[in-house]
Image (cartoon, rainbow, N blue to C red; front, side, top):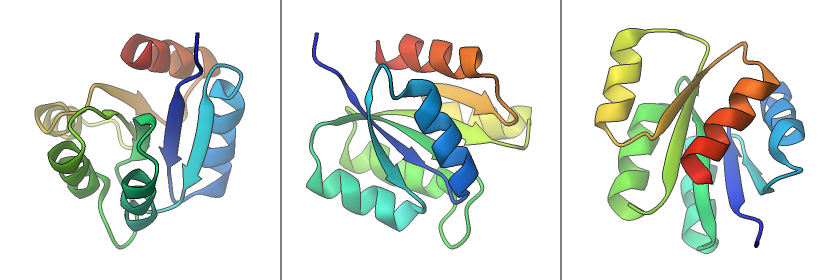
Length: 120
C-alpha cells in the first residue's frame, strides 16, 4: 500500500510538529504555516490527499482556505483543527466541505483515528 501524503497547516510550530509526530508513521507529511503556503503547496504537489487545517490563523482564516481548497481541489479531504470548541464553527466547517474536526488540545489516538477514518 502506498503511503498517502497529508498536509498540516497551522500557524503554531508546536502544533504542526505534534501532529507530524502522531501521523508520520502512517503518512508522508507536508508542513505549511499559513493559508497562502497551503494553497501554494497544493498547486505544486498534486499528490496531497488530505489537509489538517487550523481554523484560526492570522492573515487568512482557515474556513476561507477550506472553501478555496474545496473549490479548486474538490478531491482533497479536509480535517479542521481548532482550539475553540464551537458547534457553530464545526457546523460551518462541515457545511463548507470539511470531512472531520479535531479540537485542541488533542490526544494522539483521537487524531490518528480521525485521520484514518477520513483518509483511510
